[in-house]
Image 1 (cartoon, rainbow, N blue to C red):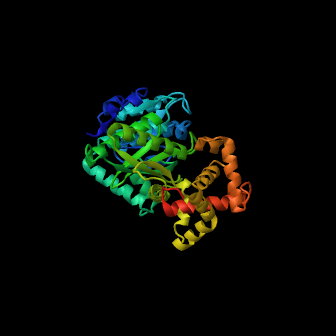
Image 2 (cartoon, helix red, strand yellow):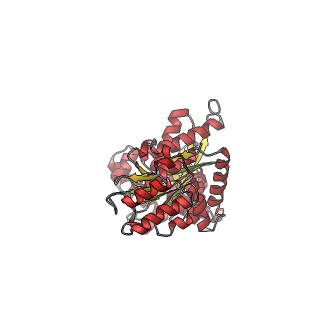
Image 3 (cartoon, rainbow, N blue to C red):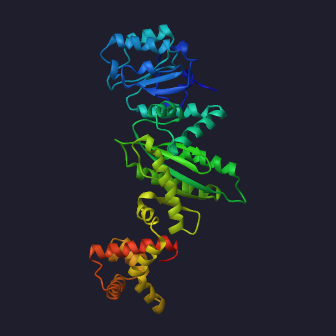
Length: 403
């Protein structure tokens, strides 16, 4: 069932919006929602479109206010919603009269409600009511976008807004591999859990998400660039929520890869490629299980190193770490593990000691011994970098076992 103008007022998130005029047009179907940001916006509107605006474009022009109502009615649009007390103290009376005359629903949006929230809430409600064929078209659209096959920016926005894509955001892809419990979960129930958790994450974290179910499940985080925490921080929170909920709710496990933020929607495929690569590298280097969260930014060195010949990587590990590996084997010590933690902790003795559950002086003794064996000074940034690179190469070659 399509969303009607009358049903807008029954949506919980929009219960503070009011219908001001056009009551006889409440049976109009809302098919899409757009934000008005220029005087010629109505020229591009389609039948069934609801226009939302702050009113800035027409705040001082009564004739433009009336023409806008007429243009929307002529194009068989679904209605107009205006945010008050930003540029207009209230909705102008001429707009009231014209909307009533033409049976065009005219809504009032309160000052404390953002246009983005209205846009997203209505778009989500519209998407929930779509025909099953709509899901197929939506998946096909995002598949093309994520593969980098779409290059016409105007076409992407014209199609994407029907599928929940928001303008003027940073976009970051989270790629999720769901591993169902074969004894308790079917693939279809895993898909259901995924869709439910997308909605839960939106609500609890106050973020805008797009969930796409394919062979791998994909979440696109849409983050406003000018407000709120960085999109990479929000992406990590979303990933943590999914990891926690899947393990608790249904004994399923998931692996999550997080790409880098993209401000250009046509570069979304880069974030997707990075998210997939983060999963591949993360599981290869750090994990013996199917569960984990891996960010591409943390794995960029490995992303570059993996393209070098294997014999070159092996030779580098031998030249930097073989002395310590041999000493540990012969003496039953853990100098190599201590070195790795010490460098990962920013060469801070106290943090390293806490990670190893040993006294600070024990770490200091081990570091002194490492420096003696390697003939180097770990306070030297270049020397520390060379060894840390050797450790990362060793992880790349040897996997989650110790280097």
